[in-house]
Length: 191
Image (cartoon, rainbow, N blue to C red):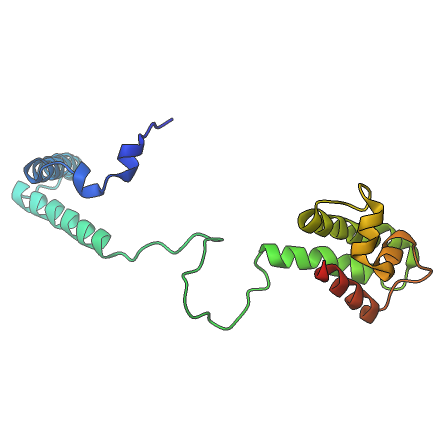
């Protein structure tokens, strides 16, 4: 486990950097070490197959490859943003990624699927949707007025209004139409 202090997190990179002379010396020593190691491997490999090449040509070739590698590393574009990361603010492309898993889509699906499934079935509506609507009503009452239907039924009945109270407490013989459901949701939003 890596331990980092708050001072390390808040200090800028320039404050933590080594003096310029030490940093350059370290890069030079690392480059020379890598060059020597690669040169030894190449010379041994060439000698194993019976070839002889000037040592200076091999060193120059290794340094050239290391220089090209360093330049290409400096010129590579930044990595693409992680999946699920926030998009930068500004103009949106005008398309919606319906396959993405965002909270709004999850909430919509949490209502859309059960409502569709309960289409003409009173028992399913009473089992699945009515309790959710009751929870929504209780949550709105709790947030806005500090009560629930169970804790203070008389005041909750007054705040909800008679049609909404009746809808939530007495199951109907048939599921409400989309128009009736929209009116119920509008009443819930008024709370």
